Length: 143
Image (cartoon, rainbow, N blue to C red; front, side, top):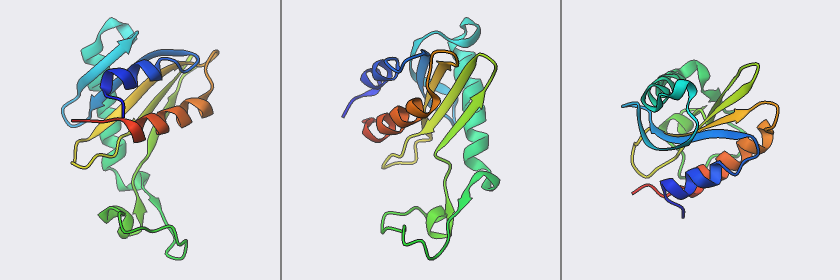
């Protein structure tokens, strides 16, 4: 299982990646950051991105409702999932030049951590980047 630094270096191998970070959304602090940052201010980037993640994660309007008869439930479902709402997995913001991807990391403790990838829109592949972030989030070892 890769740690934060290894995870960020792997995220930067995604074609078109401009920057990546692991951010704790309740405090807005970056646990690690590599590559470029918007405006050259890493603290502001982490805080602003955390605000977006917090908004998406805490709003029930963004949780998808699961049908009771899907058969997808498991014993490890969270309370939200057991109540019929699936938590937000990721957030995508698009601009004319970039994709901003936020992928929430499931942890054994309530950490509020997410992966952030800043991707050049001309060079990057959004679908591939989402799959890579999903895999990285699953393997990320937070101690």
